[in-house]
Image (cartoon, rainbow, N blue to C red; front, side, top):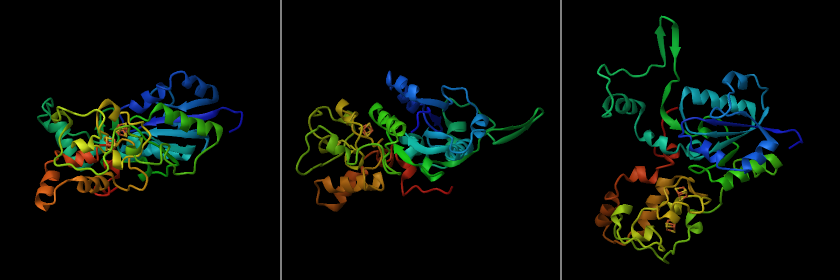
Length: 321
Ligand code: SF4
Ligand code: SF4
């Protein structure tokens, strides 16, 4: 990249804001980035409007880090706008890469989501059952809000994405690796995931058995005598490590919590849930087919557990665009 300062943008769509905080977590390194790059658009911190971005020449932003899944028409509009204005577009964080936790709503449709949110939650008072409408005629004129879609879409289902930087939120190490790659021009091949190229079990410090042998699966709070050194899966606690890409340094597991898959599928894994069903099937120590099936059936909320962060990419949950 030339001596001229690079132009960087950040955007959030359907997300919690954690990815924005992760950028601030760079601490003093933020100052190094600021010395080499200008942030030209960052709604959470910089007062730039959409029309300012629309006025920028195409491809004038060097790189945009886009976090959050796409749930409504505003997010789609901004995704297309930033794609047009940016040389490189990065799916930043788990929600942009795979839909994240918001995509768990893809197990239901828009109608079920609205029914729950605007009618049946205990704190809702809405006797006329009114839902938000994309447009409304008021004496002052037409009022519009973004249209809510049937499902949450990962960014690359709407616009082409150049790189993926997963994590909920992405760790400082990989954010710095990504930003440094753009600032130095030493970029990996397009389409790369900025993380490790192997599954989390390899990075996990726990003892793994030669061969797993599990008789039942339990929730973590049901295991009173948890072994802090031994593989969690071997103790009957569902851990998505075998299906998950490494790069987080096993940050949940080292605090005694099983992996929930926020780094997305490991290399060559197409679908987290399908891979984990195959893993679970192979470690159950039960030869009777009916009993083995019962062990799987007894896992509470298996779909939500296996797709906690990747429902937006599940091959079983394809929804019309
Ligand atoms: S299954 Fe989980 S606890 Fe076991 S080795 Fe893999 S990441 Fe570690
Ligand atoms: S252990 Fe799993 S859920 Fe936790 S940060 Fe790592 S990839 Fe994400």
